[in-house]
Image (tube, rainbow, N blue to C red):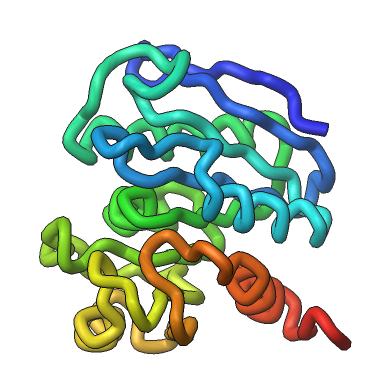
Amino acid sequence: MEERIEFLAEGITIEGLLQKNSQASGVVITHPHPLYGGNMHNNVVMVILQTYQKLGYTTLRFNFRGVGSSQGSYGEGIGEQEDVRAAVAYLAHIGIKQIDLAGYSFGAWVNGHLNCARAGIANMVMVSPPVAFIDLESVSTIDCLKLVITGSRDDIAPAEMISQSYHAWNAAAHFEVIGGADHFYGGYEDRLEEILRYSLTGIKINE
C-alpha cells in the first residue's frame, strides 16, 4: 500500500507516493512532461511502478515541481534533476541499499542527465526517451543504464534515432522495440511489463 510522503528539493516541497517493500532494493520513477499533462499517475508510470512492486522493490513515484501538490514551477529539466536527486536521497535516508531509477519520456530525459555514481543510482531504465522532441545531445555517458524501450510507432522517441544515440550513453545497455506501440503504449502495457520484468529478473511472465 502506497503512503503519501513529502521531501524537499532545493527548499521546495515535493509530493510523492511511497510503498515500502524491501530494504535491499528500491526504485524512483519519473513521469512525462509537466507542460503536457504529465504526472505520476500516467499509465506508463503505473506499468513501471506495478512491475517493480510485483518484484518486491520499494517504490517512490512523485510529481515534479509545479505538478499536482508539488510546490514550485517548471524548471526546464534542470530543476527537475534536483527533484530526482532529492527523491533518490529520500530512499537512501530510509535505508534502501540499492536504488534504481526508471523514467518515461521527459522523465527519462531528466534522469539521463544525472551522474549515476554521484547520485547513488545502481541501474537505470529509460522508456521512450524523447529524442525527436527534446535535444539529448547534452546526455553523455550513463554508466548505470541497463535498458532502453520504445515503440515502433513512437514518433517522439523514434527507434531509428534512439538506435543511433544509445550506444553513446551506454553501449552495453539493451535496446528493445515494441512492435505496434506508439508513445503512449495504449494496448501494449502488458508487453511493456513483460520486457521490464525480463530485464530485471531474466524470467518471462509465462514461465
